Length: 304
Ligand SMILES: [Mn+2]
Figure (cartoon, protein in one colour):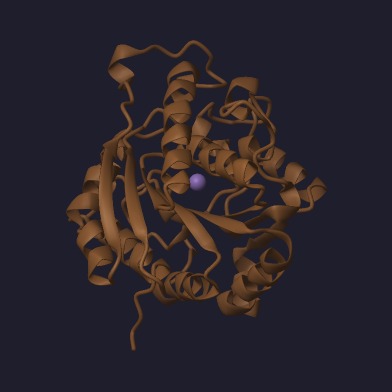
């Protein structure tokens, strides 16, 4: 893999999640050595620090179907600008979360850049959940359950309009991989959208290798920039216990790494999110360390 300029952008936010502590994820990922691991691969790494996000203590919930909406909108705009700037500088942005509401700003920033450059965006969402609720369907009101719907232009206007346009990505350019916990409203949405969706049983039957290759085959023909949004809860909780919404039966160690290795070989990935690392729920930073290794595999780390 060619050497890249990697820009780390922390998004210390737990406003979108139902459990506290995921706002400390960016620190945990830094402490796990993500920068030095990427430098060891020959990449240049700079750390932009964190997007300022105001904590829950100084806010109140105005709308229980869209908890902490105003602050998430404000922080998402900042994140979008930071991600778009990194790409404009020729860098490879990695957004360190933080709950998965970070995907709203991150995908907006990538999409802004692609729009400016006349590039078509492909989005690979790796997650235990579909993250496709809307204010109408959400069981919890937690915005981290909405970012993939938002990226495709569905949901609250203030969220879909971050960056000033919508949708950020066409459903036919979205692949959702690893799901095993889907809400009724999300199931309906998935059924009527032309997305590529691979739930865990299909990964079990066909193998992660076949599936990632299939997604890449479509992406090679239809898009120019691939953004990967990796939720640590996609991985089995035995490997990544430090997540807010663990679901058994996730990706194995090798499935997760092999997916990243194949993506690295494709040379199509230009930006990445690492979401939902929650140090409060973790065991001696295991989940952040696992995440850092996953990032290294996506950026070219090889066994041989
Ligand atoms: Mn997620």
